[in-house]
Structures are given as structure tokens and as C-alpha cells.
Length: 250
Image (cartoon, rainbow, N blue to C red; front, top):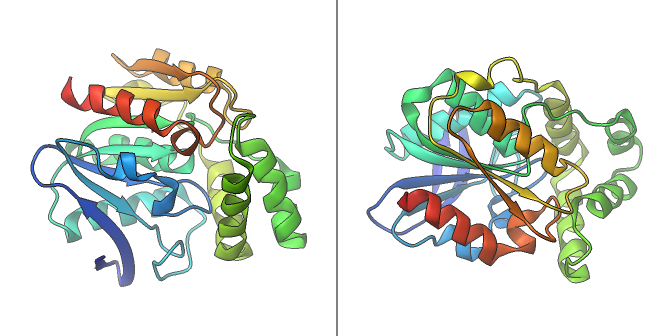
């Protein structure tokens, strides 16, 4: 799979499909392109890119502590792979990145799919402190909140191990970036077609966060995935893929 250089950093990504709309999958805090199951990385009728942000997965770099810096890297990635405009699909922190790009570089955004996210992403101080003091224990605590009651325990364990392997510096930076993120005063300026997906069992960004986004982004639609927690796309991949495919073809 390919790498590309963005702002002096070597970033890893996957790409699948030819023709149709370009779709860019943007993972959340402490994640990687593997937070997107194959059913989403292989959406029919689209060219789908899945990026490892700096310091995550197979990408180089140290990560950031500002959503705006990740947004700049994401736009730089679109430049590097020659995509002028894409549908941005962002999960949690990735949803913050997608919203930021829609506000700062709207000409690059053909549509938004905001998954398990909000216009503000406040993080408890206990998590921010714990990531420095006890990375393993805090990551397990995050996992306990991030996954819904129907999630496969093996998948949950794999998820927290992968986040722990990302390292305290990057994971803490991500959650600090989320804690600073707040575009509630500006989301009504987003003018691109938008789909908001939320899990009924999400305890990190409860469904009311997604409903608020859909209510304040002009023309946005809201779709609730029953039984899904914060890791909606991994817990209910078929439901997520169906909703996004319908949105793309609309």
C-alpha cells in the first residue's frame, strides 16, 4: 500500500476503487485506517482513501495537539494524491477535522459524513492526566466507554492494544486537541451536504451530540444506528456502509 509526503511527513494510506466520488476516511483519536472496516474502505461506486494521520498507524511524525493542524495535513494529503474535492467521512476526532476543513476550505469538500462526533469534544481531565500517568489503564478505561454492549470482546481488546501501541504522547495530544475543539458558533456556516451518524449506545458522544449537529448544519440529515457505541463503524459495519452508500448516491 502507498505512502505520500505531506508537509515533510511520510503518511500511509490505502485506496480502493476507481471512478465515482472520492471519499476520504479520517479516523479518531489514537486510531488508524484500521478503524474503518473493509466494507467502508471498499464502498461501491467510489474511490475510497483511508489515511493514517501523522504519528498513527504506519505514518511517520509525532501527531498534533490541535485539530486545525490535523486539518491542514488532511488538505495536504488531498493535494498529494491529486484529489481536488472529496466526501470527508470523519469519526470522533476525525469528525472535528472534517468540520474544520468544511469551514476553512469548503471548496475541497463535496460532502460530510460525521460519525460519533460533535461540534464540541470535551474530554475529562482524568483521562488527559491518566494518559500520562497510566497509559495502559487509561486506554482500557477509554475502551470500556467507547464500545457498545454488543461489541465483540476480542475486538475491544484489540482496539485498546492498538491505541496503547500508538503511545502516550500521540494519544494525549489527540485527546488534548479534542478537548480544545469547539465550533458550535460556526457549524451553521457549513454549506455542504451532510449526514450525521450516531450510535444509540454511545456514551462518549451520546446521540444528542449528533442530533444537535444535524439540527444546526443546514440541510443535514441524522441517522441513528441502534445498539452501536462510539465505535459505530466497527460495531455495526453493514449499517454504517448502507447509510453512507445511500448518502453518496443521493
